[in-house]
Length: 119
Length: 108
Image 1 (cartoon, one colour):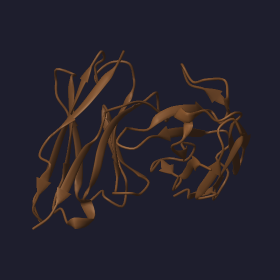
Image 2 (cartoon, chains in turn yellow, brown):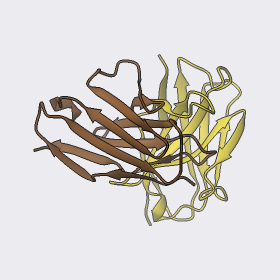
Image 3 (spheres, one colour):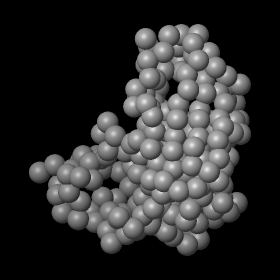
Image 4 (cartoon, one colour):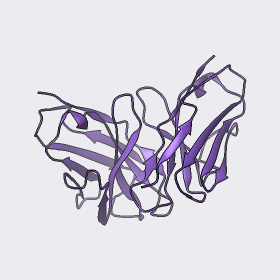
């Protein structure tokens, strides 16, 4: 059973950098060929794919200039950084796992963490 | 980028009735569509992938169909725990992988 858990600050000021960590238990981001992903959901809105790490990384072009995803060598965590945040980045941030590149649906999700950007 | 649209925005259904939710892709995504259920305060839950394959543990009352640009999620007999928001997602094209705006299923 794979479990994912997001952690990080819940409140940021405009222009700061959002930094979140996803802790993975029951699996490793360095094994299995899975795609470890960040997805966000603006309040009351739909889901927006941010990017993944699976050895290499790939980001949503709409966020590419501000986002980076990295993994730690232990294989138990991966992180999201989003620079120069504004109120438009206020959202619930989920980490999730995709089965493979071609089967890129999300079978495991974290519970989500609300990040609010406010001055 | 493939744009996913869903209809209706809200579907009011009585318990025990059938619910039919639609999802359309802006270009063909073959059968590379997944469906998720999301309840308030929770993460989405994978229901269907490959347009029609139920994920592990998903009840048989949930079924998916379609290919190309038109997809359907059917809940054959709504139970109280099925009232939620449902999202479709395409994963055919290269990233970004995109979701529809959701259909809320509420109690009639």
